[in-house]
Length: 130
Image (tube, rainbow, N blue to C red):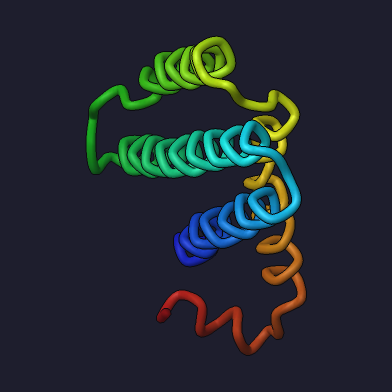
């Protein structure tokens, strides 16, 4: 996958997250809506940060930069886990909907993977120019 695919996954995170929060708003309770919203926000921010960190690590490996950006993965994970724990402890949210909201990125990755695999070979040559 290329940078275009990663951008599509990020956009898909926002779209599917909005759909999940809207569906929870129509069908669920206030706690479920808030849980889905917090999960989607954590998911989107986490995925965006991971993409940026991995891009910087790739650039460093190719000699463009020499910073140790991989060291940011562990603190990012700790902040993410702390934010989820604090949200569960301090906010009146549904833990199941927090997990559902955070899992949106899995669906986004799956959708983009299927799209990437099923595209025609002619599109593969043009993907670099997009």
